Image (tube, rainbow, N blue to C red; front, top):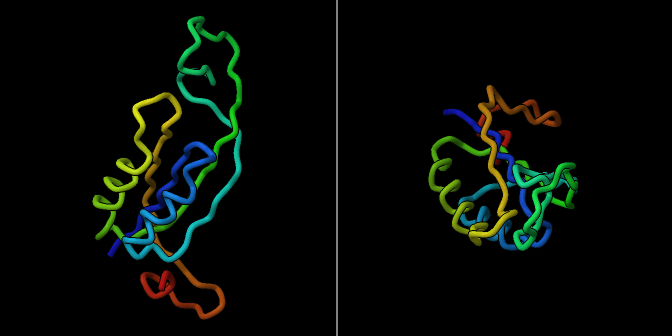
Length: 115
């Protein structure tokens, strides 16, 4: 059984919807960071014609969760569908392998630490 760290960076308004989506998959925890950032468009709004020379950091949120690899593909599909608008700023999803998870209080590791 493996685990993956899923980090989602998206607009500030998407948290409630994303929480409902991931809870359907039994995700038991997440950490949310308020961050500033920009992507390829350097913070440009969709309606701007000029290309920006200097990036503008926009308010975003990063949601981090550790999930069982058994649900990963379906979870990612659901997150993509939930966040998709087709407009600049929908966000990005980063995936990283996790070797183990340990609950400090009990010493449990692996899947038991996530329950």
